[in-house]
Length: 216
Image 1 (cartoon, helix red, strand yellow):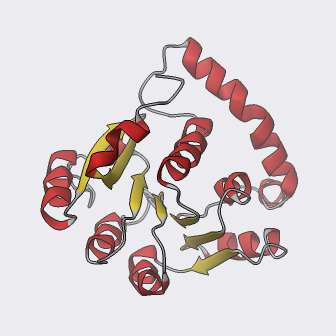
Image 2: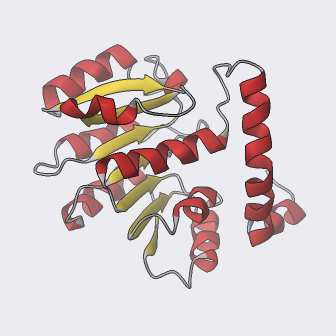
Image 3: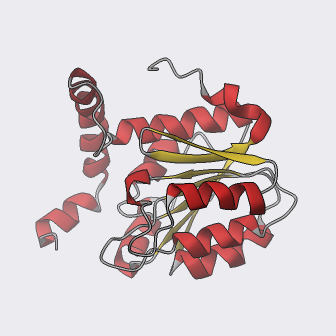
């Protein structure tokens, strides 16, 4: 539980300044150590979202797991619309206050396993989904999130899921193997890849679009 001072800091834009300054340093240290698996730098995740959106021409981002809204802060000018779902009421309210001047940023409070199925019919274009709503003190909503996505026809959505290491069949997470089979069966025309602990589900003919990272 963060202290009162820690919460004030995280709710301020000083937090985002600090994260922006520290991100490239954290990334450089990770690369110097040989890019170990486990805790992947936030900068890698930021760039995965940026590069995937560019590769597929996606202008709308749907995020589950707002937390302290740093991903929104980083990506807010790269997308025409951003929807972010946060189960914690205080964090959702903090994010709303931070982005009150940005009408294209929509903060939705509640369980993403319940809210995402209601949001999907309102989306009128292919979106990039960043599923990062795993709070390991609670049951994960990822199965319900994916069920809703796979049942949403007619859109070539692209899905990125953080924390691939947790997909081991325990704690409500499917295994990567079962998820791969499910994508092939239920999300026809899409394939699954894992890179830098990020699960990537995208239209099948487009693998080459995601293999041009300057870091690999």
